[in-house]
Length: 380
Image 1 (tube, rainbow, N blue to C red):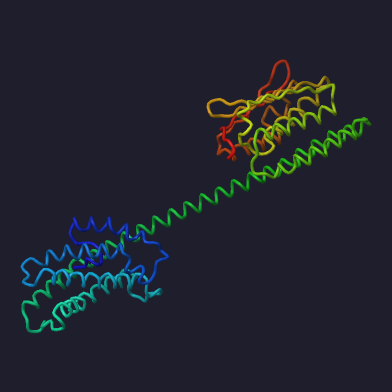
Image 2 (cartoon, one colour; image 1 turned 30 degrees about the horizontal axis):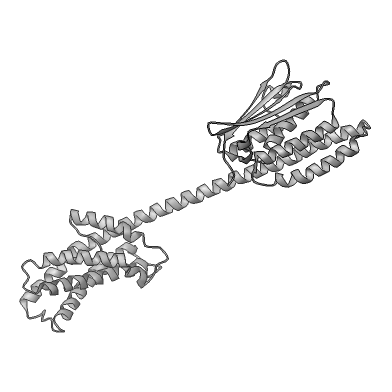
């Protein structure tokens, strides 16, 4: 009558056992010892099932119903204790049985002793099992009922525990896998960001070198402006994310710096919707597009040109467009993006889980339009 082992051999009772065992399996792993064996959910379940079997044992039994229920509960609690004992002890089980095998064996062994103890308690220490035929019959019914149903209930419990453990392990594995993938993407994003920094710095220093080589009197003032600009820009390169408003400030400072170098060959205009200022983006997003337009569009063209930066929102997405009237698409760009833009595309893909697009189109009569689109996410 292993109510204590939790369940019943019949189909309706086993359905109840299966559902209750899921609750039992949810007991935290950190619970050990008596705290696990006598957990209230287990005890409550054992009491309910013991009372159910007590009702069956009361049929045709001449003993008072309270006594029969008490005997059923005592046997159920003994089975619960044995099941829980072998559930966690000993840690290194000896052969030939596995842990669940020892649990079943322990239940089978404890039932006759638990039934005898139940009769001893309920009869005031004089069960008369050797002489009283009515008590012998009741004892036999109690033992047979428990031996018939308890092992099946215990097997059901073990199966449900193993299924719950397997699900927990699978969930833990998926969480760990997801965390490792996130860390890998974060590392990849930081690596790409680290590659952008020297690319940008070397291009800017090359512009200064051109002024020095040409003996321009503006070289010194441009260099001072560059130093002040880099002091503000470099720390932001190491941040995991920035805002379009901050990016636009850097772009404005960069274009003003470039305009000092080629005042008669560079004009620019910046247009951004106020709501877009708080949107998140990886560092150097706008700056990479503008720096690419200056280096590959305006610089190579003898007449110079104009750069227009437009940022707006539409249907929950941010649109960035950098248009220049430079020399247009170069031969190396017809087959793909340059180094800076290729890294920017990959960084945007990583930052927005693939939901970002970067396209280059040629502008007539000459020039290039770089368009960037990504989800609009405000900073918290």
